Image (cartoon, rainbow, N blue to C red; front, side, top):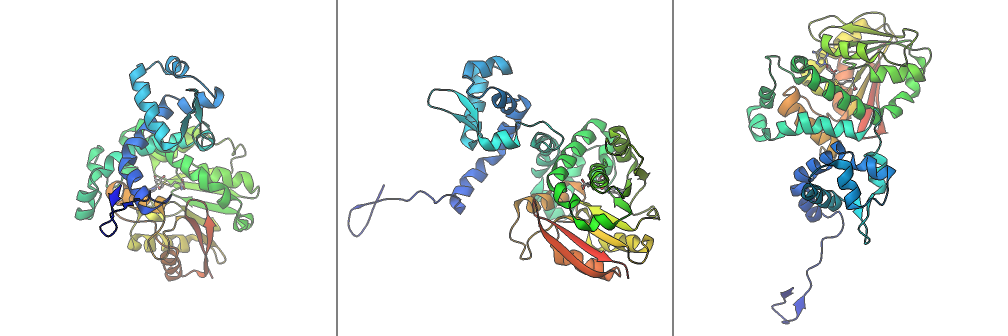
Length: 360
Ligand SMILES: C[S@@+](CC[C@H](N)C(=O)[O-])C[C@H]1O[C@@H](n2cnc3c(N)ncnc32)[C@H](O)[C@@H]1O
């Protein structure tokens, strides 16, 4: 309590309103520690256990995890402060509804895979953010062996980490994929070229939803191997083909009537994007379409936590360039490559947009 200088009466200092900048600040400065606590809780499967055993006691959680009781006490306190686990007055523990929905499931789109990838690959790199941004290049890549200029290529030296990375990436892709897959535009595509298609998750979902569709997934050799080893359950009739190569040094395969860049162009500079869109234009027939799917920062470049995280990750670690460009940038590049009817469909989850152009 402070005292007012005029009246000598106690002055009540108001708590910040929920979601005020001050409240966000206090959460933010503790977030790196709490983020890691949540990942530890995932690794110990606490959310999964509580989903099956709501109201478990401390002793039951201790027996389940097998970790020292004091460590569990410290971790549970940390996770309870986030609200993701609740400790009731009778001392029992429960998943919060959000944790039950987001963290307990273990399917391919689980946040478990996403957060493990962020913990192991993204966030260690962010300790070098000032250095990398000042240098204007991805100096955090030095932590990964090899001399290739991007994280995507360097991870081929570490297949285990590459698997973690692609599991994390495809889990996040799945979060925004339903909306893309339902887009009517794909109902009239016959053969899609999925450039930088990763482990084939996007193509697999698209051909499953659109029975007329075939897809060629173009990626670097180590990633194509990952795609092959997944043997997508949705392609028993061979409607997905894998094509290995480098986006810049190898030609795009011909025969497609649409080219999709999903979470790919954001990795690169405007100059490189112009080059890739020109290559897409060159292999498409008249009437062929280009699709760019990914994060779009808001037009005034002030909003979007997911877009901000992505842009920082790209510049500090992944490629040393690129960002979650605003839709208007993509539209300009698509027009410059010679496409017409350029537009962006907005309102997709996780700050995503779909920019489209048609070859005259
Ligand atoms: C962010 S991932 C996107 C994967 C997938 N399209 C999705 O939406 O989840 C980017 C992909 O581009 C691929 N890539 C990056 N640089 C490449 C290059 N020079 N040649 C071929 N593929 C490349 C990476 O291997 C990776 O699979």
